[in-house]
Length: 488
Ligand SMILES: [Zn+2]
Image 1 (cartoon, rainbow, N blue to C red):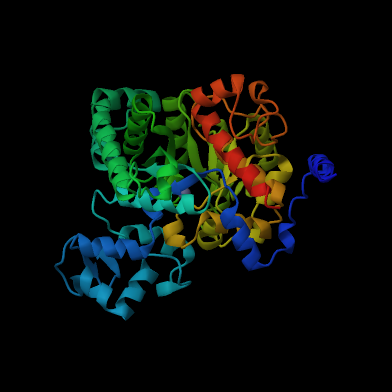
Image 2: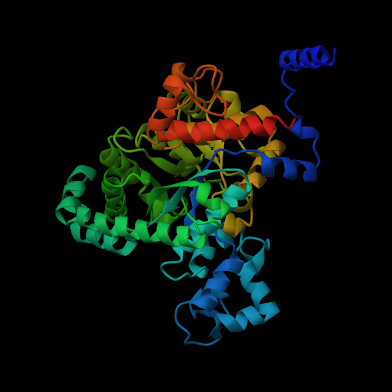
């Protein structure tokens, strides 16, 4: 009898419909924080390695590396001469000074020194001095942070061989158009820098793995996170120098599978960023064959009318998609203000061009609160969206906080599940994915039909997961998701 009863209960459990998705809008702040920390978020596609480190660590490194602090500017300095410049160790020991430095290196103190969020944010980079070689420490910190939030993939923006690559661009000079300038930069020897980038990457990864004790019994959680890199170029300065950086990025991506795409960064509202925007789009198109040869993500539409003229506001996302061939748009916050915005959105939906939405960053830098962010409109238009932090060390946030902000934008649990899956389906990892319908996720690819979320893939699906980097990360995510949802 008991056995029959257990059998019946088992059959009932199998037949029971899956538990309803939780209503996130009814959760209080604490409940939502707990939920989002544990929710598997797939990956982080928009994270500048230079902005991801908490200010406390930057000060610790300055003490270890015997750097100094300009106590008037509240900035880390590599030299210790000058009025008000003190050893970092003295600042660490002085609580009032230490606290002021934390304010200066972050956006935690609104209105600090009368700066806008935008100005405080973008000027903070020049105050956050770190010794070369600390990139590996920053990587370890970021990867451990993602693992703590049940997230195991990251594409991190890094700027290798900055000075050397821009010098080659300066030597080549602008030759009248992108094609001729490309030839001049090639002739000036840009490809010769690739081995230096590979060596920098080796050193970066080794330092991070050593710090995380990977491969030992005390391995930290960050060892489980797969890290890939986006080659970021600065949109400031003469365009031939920006182009030389991007051209080195293209050569590096061809030579080293850890590098998966390009990015173009620095304030989009800067004088040269605005002046050369059209030239930059043509440069990217030329170097990547409009995104067909090399994956490109571009910051575009990180703007408001407080920052640029209506004319500059009117087309950046559109041209990043149509002229440059970007497969992903960083921010895209200004898209609704552009001419032909609905057409651009429909084109992005049709072509699968993803928006990397950074809700906390946008609330601080652009002063766009999450309730007014266009993420809701992107969802309505079918534009794929993933959520990311941008610079969590400066904004003093975590990826789970961006997911919690998304609820204030009206996102449901299913929307966030899609955002997390998008962070892998629209990653620049090579290989076929597990899904035939990215951004929808009702139809697994034929080889994996009926298997997604299982403990182990079988048959053709096992082959796919073994061969494809993207499918492997997606498989891991789906297992985490199945385990998370079992707790509903
Ligand atoms: Zn960014």
